[in-house]
Length: 87
Image (cartoon, rainbow, N blue to C red; front, side, top):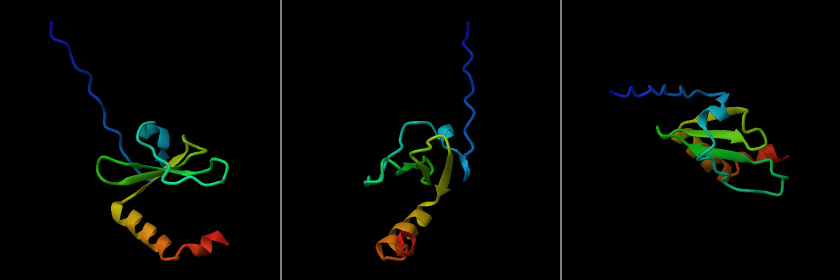
């Protein structure tokens, strides 16, 4: 008797999707501060995009960015362009 393989339906990845739909494996905290565990977590997706979620709300929304968007943000933050967020 031939076994029928179940079809695995691919997950449609979109900005604001529930982060839990991306699974629990592969999330990393790029840095950790003294903020009581309220950190960002990031995951590199198979297509090269990056998902970001709030560690305190792992079932909340995931924001999805292209590599270019993440690069621009990190370079801008390093250059002080996001310092206005600190005050």
